Length: 194
Image (cartoon, rainbow, N blue to C red; front, side, top):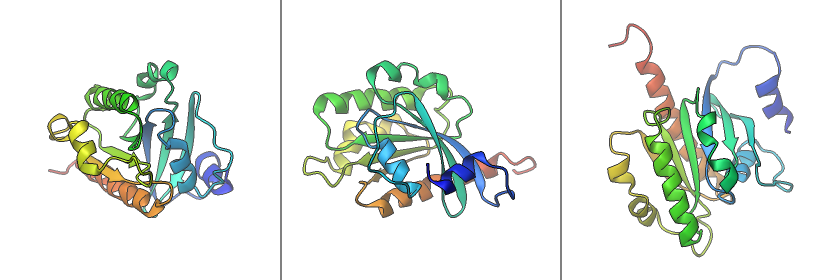
């Protein structure tokens, strides 16, 4: 584990001036959750293996630290996702834009479940349409329509961001928008604000 990420998460030290948010990261196996998070932490991506339970990374950004709880995406793990939702302040959902029709359908069902889950339904969502660099990748409009995001997530705060591990600027842009949503909600919950 990279020393910066490890230190930010585990060690005592001077208090960080950056706000910390606890977020949960979900998506099917192979969607690229671990690769994207590892890149964001500037860690080596050579030895990434699928997450079998969950892992936690403190991902540093300029104005915030996201404590990301990444949940494994295999069939036998997805049924336990909801046990890890408590305490989350936001949700990152990673989908493989170039996946098979069957996997896309499964991802759609999982996203719908998350968007409607009582512990998540009022939280901001960052939906990363990953693997946009692959020839079979679906466009953002195709994904928005297929996942029925407009009607389903109406009134919710969500961002759909195209990305790939080859274009980390797009990933960071999505996360920066996501952090802005988290900050907005934080401001709304300060006592005495109207």
